[in-house]
Image (cartoon, rainbow, N blue to C red; front, side, top):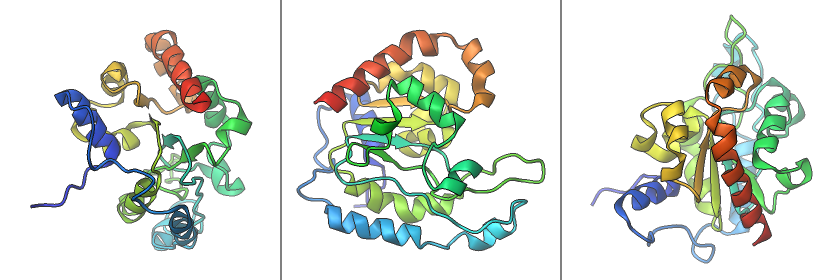
Length: 234
């Protein structure tokens, strides 16, 4: 039998579509990577230089600096795209204007957002991918997720809420359910809530998208904030 390579988020989405109530392969803290082992994985990621040549060839010509932010006890998983330049410089995820907007969406203050025991941030690439000649962010290198996401996600054994920020994360975690693009995927949020919430990227470049799609802030955000509070208070 071929190995099942789906992420457990994708399995949850597909179980909901088929009416399944549980997934016997869903990670449980008792039988997955221990906290100590996940710490070791995190140390390996921080030492990773797989993309050094790729980054050296970008317009920014920067060195790798993996930004990791997770522990095995986290109950909320934020799956994003990749660090930007400011995050690359400070070494803290979403430590920029996009992070301010994301925390507003979540109804979460900075202290809670950066509480490693409760919130994990696992982007599609742990390093800043760099800028192209036009000054635009390059996409996250696929090699990063292929190399590191399985041991990291398997080590997050008690996640109750997964927040998928942007199209790259949605395609990776949701598979075919995200094939229609970000707007369609986010508009169908009720199909995967309350365990999974797809969001657009909180970049200020998406302000026009928010104006064009007012339902996002009037319908999705209140439900998301209530779910965040429920998980954190549990």
